[in-house]
Length: 274
Image (cartoon, rainbow, N blue to C red; front, side, top):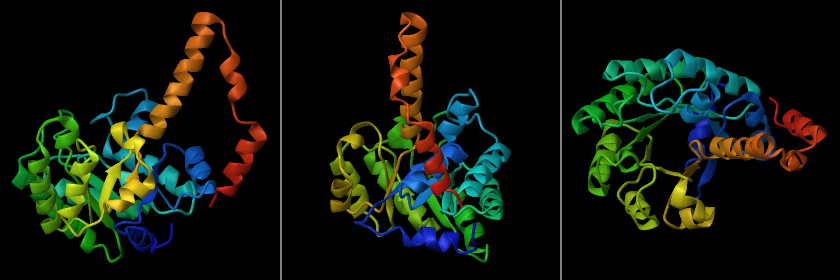
């Protein structure tokens, strides 16, 4: 990872011209997405947890997340963002230290959410902003570019509504966040309201109802970045689940014939390598 990875990552964030931030979970998926034209990658805490046989939401340690990120970074030359949950601790200094450690391993940025993991409770709004302020201060002191994304997750978890999400995002902007993210508001209109409320780049999660919209739809309301979260990982889990169920319950192996040829996989992995 080059020293200007953060700057390259930041340059992709243009309102109204959303790029796809592809959440991957191992070197193979990283290289395949790079070969297919991805401009940047991200880890997914849920996908990593699934691979370890654990539930999403607070089951990973910071050391595990950092080691996992290093595997992704080693696989391709693309900028990589770390999905670092709540910063792996409650207090602001822990968030700041997480930023410093993320930068040390070569990540171009991380996102930090306002959920008090492993519960789905939201941090007090002022405390959530203080956590982002500490992380932003650490990012600015790095001596290189680093993109800090602040997440207001209460819409996703059901802990607060759109008005509170907007209030928190404004506080995160004032605290120094570079990109803002409120996963899965209720509708495209709500997402448009989020985009209109700030001049910062907005990340939209492509999951649930959002999968019914095109990149052009998101561009039209000013979205800058489209991340997948665990959507791609859950799609792979669906394929394994359905094929396994057909085999083990019905003796049906037909799904296996739909797999990609090994030579085609090998070619993509080679093309996506560093």
